[in-house]
Each structure stands twice: as C-alpha cells, then as structure tokens.
Length: 162
Image (cartoon, rainbow, N blue to C red):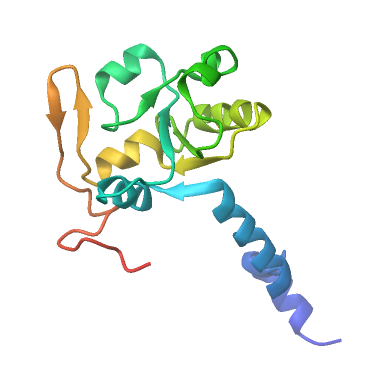
C-alpha cells in the first residue's frame, strides 16, 4: 500500500480528485455558454457597435428604480412568460441580471426565456457587481458611479488581465 491514498484522504482538496482535462474542458466550455462576466458585458455595451445582445434586468420595479444598468430592458422575472414576446426580439440573445450572486432571479428569468425559445446567458454578479466594479448605473435621479471595489475589480487598470 502506498502513502498516496492516505495523503489524499487527509487532504480535503483531493478527497474528490479533479476532473479529467476532457471533462473539465466540457464543463467550463458549457459554463461560458451560460454565463457572462460583468466586465465583458460592460465592454460590449461601451463599444460603438451593436453589442449583439439585449441586457435584461429581471428585478422588481422598486429595485429597478433604486438603480439599473443604463440601456437595460426592465422585465421582472414573474412577467417574462406574458411580456417577453412584446419586449424582446427572439433572434437577439438576452443577458439577464438580478441583484447579485446571492439571488437566483436572473437564472429563473433565463430559464423562462429559454423555455420561450430565446438564447440566453446570465450576467454573473448581477447589479451588485456592476456597481462594485465601478460601472455607471442609472436611478430616478440620474446617472451615478461609485469607486471600484479593489476586492472585485482592477483598480488603476481597465482590465483584470483574465
């Protein structure tokens, strides 16, 4: 008997070994097909061309009024089945967002949209990370921007390098 199984049992990381490279590639490739990063969404929206998607805020009207991404379409999750077809072009991909990582409203909106035939991704981090990364947002009083949080965004640089 070798010491490797004992070492693996003692090491919490190795209790479940990493997936094979092929399985990891399939998993992470699929993940990127379902998720969009806040910084990538912001860069696409800031470009001088069509970003290739519609950004959808799936929160309540009260939440929308407290702040939202400029240019986003407002469609609360519960209203997706009855109103999506009047607000969204089925040929244009949709990126959904809700409050933040602790909220699954964007995932529920994405599921409802997928069920209606839309191509959809969820913006990871939601509105919380949009604000924390220092991007401009809109309220009833106008546009605002907060300083980037150094724990969530590159400070002093336009990109994180990832």
